[in-house]
Image (tube, rainbow, N blue to C red; front, side):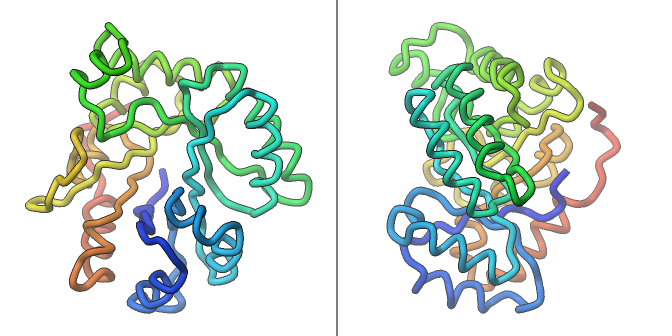
Length: 242
């Protein structure tokens, strides 16, 4: 379990990130998520900056392409020294296995990043999935199917809603992780998310890590909000067992 909430750095530029990070104690190591918005504007240098500042990084680029392209891309990304990165499970087993190979090949001098697969976005409802993706099964069945495919390809886990974590743990191995966005403290705005839970509910359902963006980045006091979410997330709930 990742005890620190992963903070989604939902910013476009380094210029926005620097003052945000200054609201946290300089000696505190954070786990932060760099997504497409930020990476496409700043490139690999933003990852190097955050690493040099002492933070762990989830590089959230959701690679989805032919196996050869994904393998070569992952080989390059591995050299950035991130802790966690991802692909889209919809790319298929061969593509996911190629991503694993690329990460291993690119990590000759350092630890291989953990690799997880996006199942269904937490902004996607079952009705959307069925009407727009033409997937006729239930959303939970789709998510579990992708999780089993990711496990078979050698991945470490999946990105999913915490609402699906229990079912995924029941179908996969003990060390297979569920990284869960769509986390909202009580009374926080849901915004464009559909399948959301509180930090304590996520832990009770078996999430191994939570990703929190706007509730922290848009808070009047981001550090105090982070501490509050971290406390709620880290409190043990004995009502859940894997």
